[in-house]
Image (cartoon, rainbow over the protein chains, first blue to last red):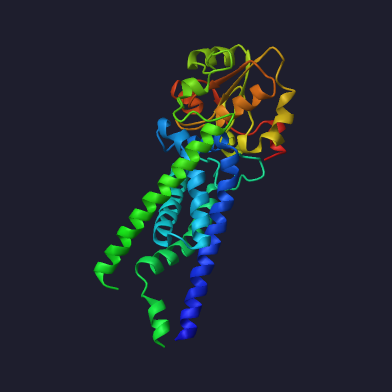
Length: 155
Length: 175
């Protein structure tokens, strides 16, 4: 039993680290170049005009803080809730644009389109779907998982 | 886990989320204010403003003006859509410069644009920004006489104006 708990612990820590590093990495270029990120947000053609700059100013910092919280292990329920929500929203936005044939640049990890990252939107959808796996795992663990810590000490 | 515990966790998550979002908003807004090139929090993203040149003149061209330019060969039209879409049908006087492969195509087409000619970019659909991106890139390269025909392909066909199918010689090697 203890082995199982240890394994679960590694899965949780691993998922947190993967998503934490991912979110921090995704935030850096956007923080450095907010105007270019605003352009990427505009290209998605989803948000109303008055929300585009506000999103470009705040979202990268939200990603950075969430990444740090996931790695440090603070505010776990809150950070897992927002991270999962954000990934679902990002995926939804990509599927929406894929469905209406709008070949916009992803803007996922870089604010600008440098000409080297022009993969089709379907690839981004697949990749974002993969990121949801650790997020859903953490979500399940945070909200629906059993209280394992107490049981470990009961052994 | 009992329902009461789950609800308690959700409330905890909501409270934590509020703190995280407030932290992010505060950091983002403060840093943006401190920047020398801070972003205005609310900006006008309408096409009219986006497609205004530095002098304030609009880059948008009407379908009537575009039709005249095409018929009297006063402009080179640039189709910013993919080579596949271009091959399926395009404005008769248009060359293809897919925005996603701009560097690859521009060299082939550049020589075909007379210095005194206008350039009209277009793509397809109300939300398509490829023609806008292409036009702005040309302007940044120093070309001043650039116009954008919004939702160009659809409006051109609806107006019953001349179209062509297939790929022109210079593009054929690239497709």
